[in-house]
Image (cartoon, rainbow over all chains, first blue to last red; front, top):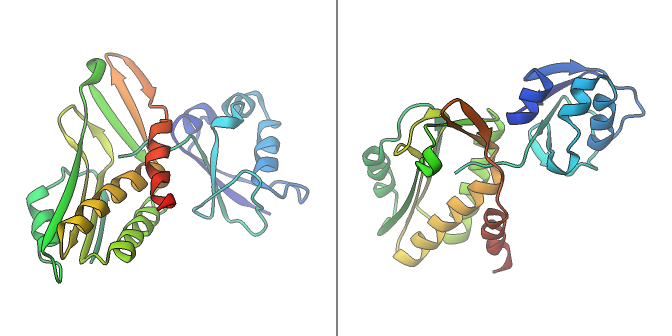
Amino acid sequence: MAIEMLYFAWVRERMGCAQEIVSPPPTVTTVAALVDWLAARDATSADALADRARLRAAVDQDFVAMDAGIAGAREVALFPPVTGG
Amino acid sequence: MIRIVVGRDPIDIGAEMTLAEGAAGAGAVATFTGLVRADDSVGMLELEHYPGATEAALTRVAEGAVARWSLGAATIVHRVGPMTPGERIVFVAAAAPHRAAALEACAYLIDRLKTDAPFWKRETRGTDARWVEARDTDTAAAERWERH
């Protein structure tokens, strides 16, 4: 299952990229599990995603809670709490 | 009429007001303009956003206001990219038959936009750049619209 990951703001800076294609195993079924799986890949990802309380997510451009499912997701975005306006 | 603009160009308030005032049934237009503050010697402010998701989120905010206050027009214009103190970051307008609806809807538009749309601010002071932290007061301001 290929998913396009998008990163914004300091998540993007710490990950070292704005976008990547990942293929998590079928056991990864939620956003939270996806974050855990990404963080387990390497030290850069682990550091970038370490502060889980300050991470927010969108699945196919809809804002979701971390326990949301990712079945059939094409695009998952990870970012800090928003600060517009 | 719902008008959503997200872009790098300076915000032309005159042009936006003309559009809002032209809305069907408009007897009152309330607006809010947010400026880049020169707090603590900020030299530059950069706005990052999530293209596509931003416009969709702003459209939902505007649709919510139009439905709740029967607006003739709801406008949200938000700049992205680099800006300097004094420049306009955001402009919202609500056009309604009377002032109460226009004023309330205007406050709703800016309160919801602050928590519901994927924008991130980064401030630069001298050579030091840092991401602005989200504020609980913004969340509280947005949530008050859910209670009544």
